Image (cartoon, rainbow, N blue to C red; front, side, top):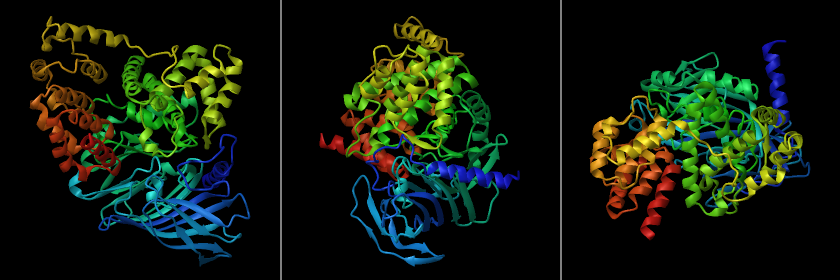
Length: 620
């Protein structure tokens, strides 16, 4: 059969799957005004100008609808700070204006857009412009980019920020296909989480996405981008100054895909490319289908931080394929993905590295369990009246992963892998709830294996903290690190006599993170002279070192700390440093001074987090 015909048939099948109402889709999404039980979006066509001068997207969104209740006469969409200029519906091949109402804005949810529709209307076209302050977009000046030559724009739609740049049903309960026509200023290339043409196209770009996605995976970017292939189905988009380094760092991506396919089924998104964003990107990565957005802070030169690529790739199965129905079930995305990430690292690198990274992740979980309210240490927290951005912690990631690790350990890897592969196949392209997960695992795994009961699995989800029988990660490599650290702390050996010749990034992180917070300036100086931590180019190691520097008032690192906080915006790396600074009066003064300089270059999500920290400290 001709390739084009096959592709059309596949697209139609995927659209059909996207518009089904599976057994897992029950209730509604408290973070969306949409009413998908009445009408739901099947397809979106965007036609947008990317206006860097005004820092706006300007144009239209055409929505193709599926009517689930024919008598419904109103379509309700999610928006945030959008300038809605005109709304039309199509009937008999003609477009007609229709009344609409934009409700007052809620600080978390934004504004509901209500559109009157006659019974025959199947398409709606909305003309609009985004706000320069859109929460899901960041506009960077040339000075804020890696190349310093051209401006840059990128989106971050998760969790509920797609509504700030497209009027749509902003809920993972709804999946849609999309196409787009984008126009950019001369010299700037647009890309999307869709089919991308690596060749330049003189400022006019066309995209289509045949697989249905939820709104939080809608992604757009534009900048002075170049492309370098890594394999037939993988490659890197980046500014030219970091393109070669990124491609070299991440050239194990194809091996990661093959390892995951072998264990958990086919990769269903055709291509897997990476977009290396400017340093202000607030996350390590974002799993936008076909085009993961990646922070440059993981380009270490030795592939020691490439587990982040394994994580974003794993989302192609857990999250992008089988998706949390609402944000209260975030663990179904992130817990599964963290588990898969470690399995990929084990297959591509070694079980030794996977074990070390699991131990480091467990230490992060322990820290969060100690400081979070007990209710928020459940895998399914109550998000009533809360911004879903506020509940992103290691609980969903690491506790969720530990649940799957415990199941694997207790039932056996072979049986568990068979279930997990089937879980992805059975639930592909539909939303999933914790209740749906429990039904699936009970029917397809637990009823065949009596080592685990459904009540035990439910307790993992519904109860705070960790069950007493959790299978905790261990690493023999870290026992050596513990012994060496104690020898140095007890002054049995000097810093330069530590057996560090073969230590990996993970071993160095374990060494630094377990040092006493009050190790003292003298010992800090000794370490720095031996290993030059203040000048480290590894952002994870430098982060751990700077936390120690703040705790010990190691002023020799102050200039590096200021440079670090003003040159990157990844929240995982900068927020703990601000929190540490705010613990003392002198640190508060430094934090305020640094943030005044750094804030314009941070993403709105990072700005909001640091603003809240500073406001809370001021109130105290």
